[in-house]
Amino acid sequence: MRRIHHVGIVVNRLAEAYGFYRDTLGLPLLREASLPAQGVRAALLAAGESEIELLEPLAPASGVGRFLARRGEGLHHLCFDTADVDAALGDLGRRGVELIDTAPRAGLAGRVAFLHPRACAGVLVELATPEDGDAGRAAPLQLKRLVIGARAPRETVGVFQSLFGLPEVTINGGPRTMLGIGQNALLVVPASEVGGTEGMVALSLVAENFATLTDACDRAGVKHLRGTGEITIEPVSSHGVHLHISRYRFP
Ligand code: CO
Figure 1 (tube, helix red, strand yellow):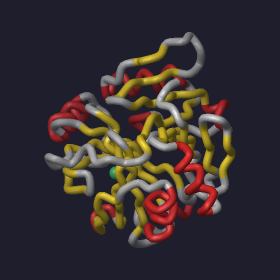
Figure 2 (spheres, protein in one colour; figure 1 turned 90 degrees about the horizontal axis):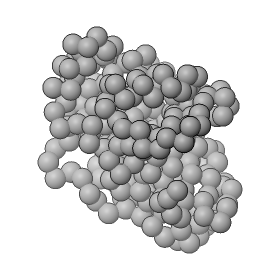
Figure 3 (cartoon, helix red, strand yellow; figure 1 turned 120 degrees about the vertical axis):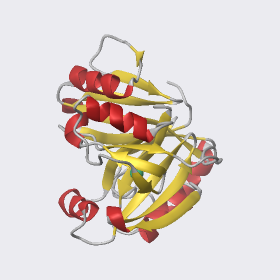
């Protein structure tokens, strides 16, 4: 797995979600299309090495429509960029990993396939082999890390290491573990630290220009808590996503 290709967020309406993600945060819209096979209208926005995918259900009975009815807006799936999705899927299938797609299909990110969340500690994982020349559009915010809540953190870390070969980048002896992927990371934390939530719980981004970002949030009336080097957007303003945006890439 070369990088986090994107993180998928389910929203009620793309047009409303653009108001925050494109207009307030300033993430460039790369493309938007209906994908009837997946029951969604989807959009990809640039966020550094990775992208953010917004998903609006085409019908309430679709998978994403049912997710929206049950859970509300919020984080939905994680997509890894892989050079050869056919080979990766074949390898996972031979290892007995539970798959949603046994063969790749056309998606917004290229040729894509989904693994079953049961195979990945409650996280819905998509694999994608993008079209050539697709990466690297400049954006004022870059995806930094995705936080995953786990009831058994060491087991979850083991699953991600074994399925996707992600190296552990920080070993601090504590209950939190960081797994590197491209320039980004997955941070696995005990579910008890994040209100008992298992699976994807929060997203961290880095702002190129922090003052511009905080001004834009103020102008748009975005609800957020502000520290000296970080703001936390309240999910009511970010379509259900716990979003941390920091001034610095490290720590
Ligand atoms: Co996706």
